[in-house]
View 1 (cartoon, one colour):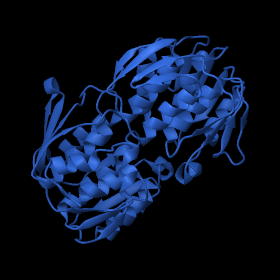
View 2: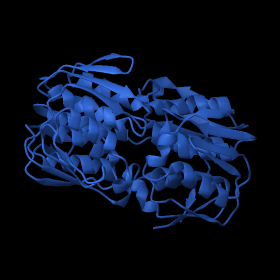
View 3: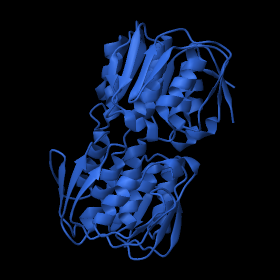
Length: 414
């Protein structure tokens, strides 16, 4: 499915969808807890549905937004993770605790994504795992007992989160040392939620002390709005000048992508935060390029490219080599599509240099079936005209109502 977007918006209000990161973790922790947990306002998207379906296949009882945890069982289930790296990586640790086999598969994009650092760490902790090339398909066969391990997190913080989710249930105490940790705020989210579910973990610098033989406690947990998704509409307000109000966001959230507010202010956007109403209003401003360290905010990279496109001067996005290993190579693909729009870019090993400019009109750009690339290019189209984006169905991975929300602020989508 392709979409064509025309110039301009009138402004309006958007309700930020629930956080994908929090939803994935809440589903898994609820499935591991004894008793029934209630997820209030979880995200229902393709990716999170993969996690709902996976825990159900492993023995948890799922009814609407309630999950009754159980002693999960591995009886040779085949878990299709689609394109959800979070589902795969977090569940690999969990199923390594279970006697019996669990086979993981996924789509072409997920089959290309690296898993070797997590496989190596789990095996060193006693897990029995089968994988020909360190990628999908992967079969876990139990055996995880705990112990001391070092895990390389240069390509994904999810490797560490997977260990922190599973090791509290292992027979032995564990000490996990994280090397080259990027996207640290996502680990902070994991730790925050583990504490809510009654799990104790001590942290000292990049060393995590995890007592074994713990138990998850069932919870009622409210999922806050997703800053990664809200950032697209903040950017729409910044680059068009039309006031866009984004609601359902917790300005004190542990989400690293709250940093978008600081970035926008530094670039000159008109940003008004209203903590008491859990809202932000963004309405234009004279944008200027700045250097931005993207190490902890990889999901913002595509939309930061759009801000750079619309800013005067040079924007340098750097310190994010892990973006080569997302749903697509986001560095290469954003450079390719900005170039198609007539914007001058320079690809770095760990990022992108963008020269602000006026985008071409009546151009076709490609999503590369990456939801964040697709949404970023759709926002870029608001300052051009007649921009067609290919393969837009991929937005269902994280933000199914995205194009409806563009229409809600006066955008023209066909």
